[in-house]
Length: 305
Image 1 (cartoon, rainbow, N blue to C red):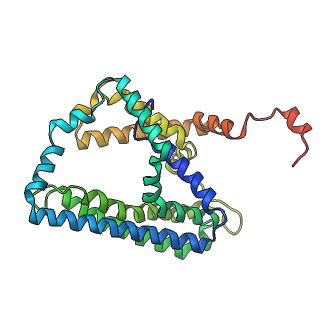
Image 2 (cartoon, one colour):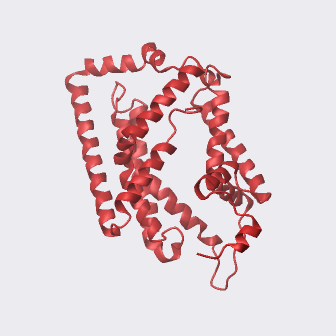
Image 3 (cartoon, rainbow, N blue to C red):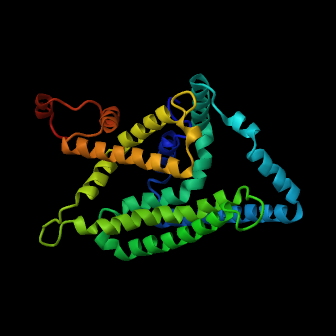
């Protein structure tokens, strides 16, 4: 509500709770089958949508041209613009209410394959004990990246106008969804494989992590604080009712700004880690979930459960 209407934490929290309540006692085999079934249905839906758009481009190019003209015109920009912070609060509140009342259901269906597979991976300690799952991690990592790169190349060609004179409507976004999910799983698998070298060896010795890796680890352990920090910075810099930099940024300068803000959050998390502290958002989150930390005297007087 206060910072970014497109925030996903509420939706993901509701989806995670729903998955836990529905599938906590479901077998891994059933969850994997369900994830694959939902993914196949999503792929079928994307292919149907692609066929419809392809038919429109061939049989009724004037309709496609009209839609493209509307999407690129000033009318849509005016309709989607938030002229002041008060309007932003109203649209953010409406988005929150819509999400809580069921809007998260579409996201739950869309990302169910990834979330269900992640649920199974957590049960099997796939990331905690990679040496016991090397073959599976390699198949997921290299296979998923191949699918994602091929899909990304096709989406890029569509976006650059090299696959037809008129701009594509919904097909690039849909294609990036079905090829991006394997890429997301693959990225996690490849990071896990790369970090194996820092696990304790058979003799108990551990290879020291380079400073850049320790910085990434620090931000990962304080990811909620980093996420909120970046949201606050972008809120201050980009909207028209704050500093209004968004209207002066192109793709390259916007990407550079995003990377720079991420680097600042990376350095900040590393400094907090060196001080031996949690991130402020993580500290608040743990207190809300588990309650205040007991004082030493209270903890000593409390018998173990």
